[in-house]
Length: 347
Image (tube, rainbow, N blue to C red; front, side, top):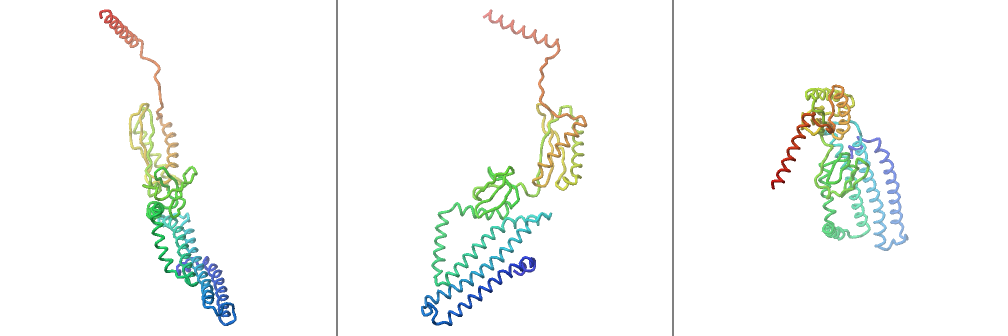
């Protein structure tokens, strides 16, 4: 807690003052009431041991609830501050960015778990102060938990799977695909993950249904595409133009930081029906490959057309050969027809 006080004293001080003053005032009032009730032998229920223990237990329970509220407010303040820091858009090193993403992923669940734990502990202490035997409750809760575990195996599977997914597989803000679901991770609950599709829909997927996860936001992305050009294309000229465009894109102020490896022409992929298929590739930061590819398409089209490189397009030949070849074909067809008729007559 001292780290919290030193790192965020400006935001923590009002919280401590507000809740501290409230706890002090209520505590003094409770103490005063207890003292007056204790010193007054004519107070209602003063002679009844059961009522006396109930009154003292109720007054102690008020103090317990105040302390539980103070602890929860401090923990929530620390978690909310850490989430604000983790949501900062300042560029960081890959290791720090990964740590920040892990914080954004795990802290909300940690906050919910702390809230439940504080509530359960405070509730048990209050029941104990009111004279309720909590040992049978704890034992019964254990048996009840085992029964719930057998009856809700899917829920337990989702929660346990979620722990391992959140530790390493993906974090908030990353784009993933699992089976038929894909989108940006927006948040978690104890048993499901919320994915925002790039077209807008939101998928809420139980962790147990995710299976193998394809994370498209880690480290780097290799983007490959193909372009068909005419058969008369000079391949070496196309390669040099592509290299020049790759250098220009890498030197661009906006696009340069998004490249890891510049645009390159890999070579001839195949001979298509209407032209030569050229293969291109580049390595970029995750999530920006589509944007960069569109820029590359525009520059490649402009450079190829300026240097006489045509793009392949479907063509249909509607004319025959010259007259001599046409006449020869007609003569051969007539000969085959004559031979067929002679064979029929002889048969």
